[in-house]
Amino acid sequence: MSSSAPAAVPLNPPRWRSGVLDPVLLLAVLLLAWQGVASWTSGVAVAPPLPTMAYLVGLVGTAGFWGHAGATGAAFLASFGISAAIGLALGLLLGLRRFAADVIEPVLAGFYTIPKVTLYPVVLLVFGLGAPAKVAFGVMHGLVPITLFTLGAVRSLPPVLLRTTRVLRLTPWQAAWSVLVPACLPAVVDGLRVGFALSLLGVLIGEMFASQQGLGFLLVSGLAQHNIRLATAVVVVIVTGAVFANLLIRHLGRLVTRSGMGA
Amino acid sequence: MTRRRAALLVRSAGLAGLVVLLEVLCRMGAIDALTIIPPSEMAAAMAEQLASGDVLASVRQTFLTVALALVLAVTLGTLGGALLHATPRLRRVLDPLLASYYSVPTFIFYPFLVALLGLSMAPLVALGVMSAAPAMVISTLAGLDGVPRVLFKAARVQRLGRVRTLWLVVLPAAMPRLFSGLKLAMSYALIGVIAGEFILSGSGLGYAISYAYQSFDNRAMYGLMLFVLLAAVSVNGLLYAWEGTLARRRAGG
Image 1: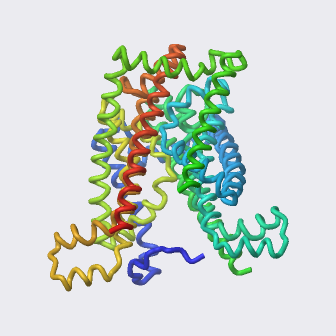
Image 2: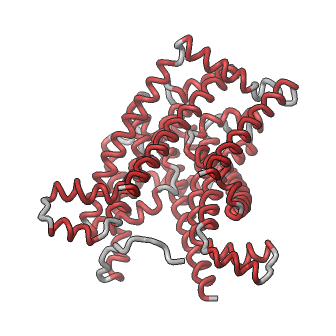
Image 3: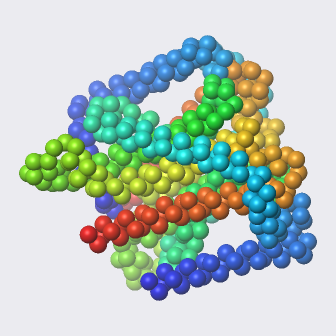
C-alpha cells in the first residue's frame, strides 16, 4: 500500500547523533518544566521530580499500590480486548458491506465526537458501581475508533484484492485472515493505538468518578488528602505506562507489517 | 445521490426505531425507571428545563468556556505548528512528544490544574486547550507539509511577497488539513471541558449532570444529557456540513 503521504520528509542529518541526543534533550526539557511548575507553586499543587521519584520508589513497594494498579490494568485490558475484538470484526464486516457502512458510519462518527462523560451516570445505573461499569465505559471510548479505522482501511483496499479472493474461492474466514487483515494492517494498528488510548481514558475517568479502586481513584484521593506526592507519583505511573504501551503497539505493528510484506 | 439518500433514510428509520423500542421497553417496565426513563420524558424534561431557564446559566457558562478554549487552542496550535514547520531542528526534538501526546489521557492533569488555578473557569479552559491544541499543531504541520513545492515556485514567479504568498497560496492549499484540525479541536475542547465540569467543578452543564446523578434526580439528569448530546451533535454536524461546502467549492473552482 503506497500511502499518499506528502514527500516533505525533513532533511536527515547524521541520524545516529540526533537519534540519541534528541530524546535526551526532550526528556531534560520536560523534567525542567516539571521542576519549574513545582518550584513556582512551591510544591502545593505539583510535587517536584526528585521527591516524587523517591516517593514512587517507596510506593511501588506497597501492596496497596499494586491492588490499585492491578484493578486499573485488569479493567483496561478487558475493555481494550473487547473493543479490539468487536471493533475489528465490525469494521471488516462494514467495510465489505458498502450500504451498511453508509448507514452506520455517520452514527459512529457522531458518537465518536460527543462528550461521553455525560453518559457515565447511565453506565453506572445500568452496570452498578464497580469494575463492569469501568470496563463498559472503556469500551464505549475504544470501540468506535477501532471500528472506524478498520472500516476505512477495508474500504480503501484495491478492489483487485477482493476479486482475487473470489477467484481463489477463499472462504470468508480465509479471505479475512490471509488477505484483508494483512492488507489493512497499518491503518488497523493506528486504530488500535487510538482505541488503546481512549479505552484507558474511559477506565481512568470511570475511576475518578464514584469509584473505590484503581489508579484514577488513587490520584483523586491523593489530591483530596493533600498528599501531592502520591498524586504526582500516580500521574508519573500513568504517563509512563501509556507512553510505553503506545511505543510497544507501534513497534509490534511495524514488525508485523514488515514480516507480512516480506512473506 | 440516491444511494446517499437511501442510506440517510435507513439510518433515520433505524435510529427512530431504537428510540421507539426504548420507549416501549421503558413503558412496559422491562427497563425500570430508576435506570433509564422513557425518551419522551427525557425530551419533556429537557423542554421544561430550557423553558424555566434554570439551566441557561450553566449552558452559557459551558459554551463560553468551550469557545474560549477553542479560540486559544486553534490560535496557539496554528502558530505552534507554523513555528515547528519553520524550524526543523525543534520539530525533530518535539516529534516524539507529538507522536505520543494523545496516548496519555490528558484528563489526569485536570486535578492539578484545579490545584494550580483554583476552582474556576481557568482550569477548564486550560484543560480544553491542553486537549485540543496539539491536534491543531499536528494538523497544521500536515497541512504545511502538504503544500506542493511547485506552488511556492509559482508564487516566486508571480513575485508575491511573504504575506501574500501565505494568504493566497499556503493557506488555501493547507485549508483541508487545517479544517480537519479545527473539527478535532472542537470535539476535544468540548469533551475536555464537559469532562472537567463533570468530575470536579461548581458550575456548568457537566456539573449539573453529575449533581443530578448524585441527588438521584433521574429526570433532570436525562433532560440535561439529551441537551448536551443534541448540542454536541449539532455543532459537529454544522462543522461537517461546512467542510463539505468548502470541499465542493474547491472541487468546483
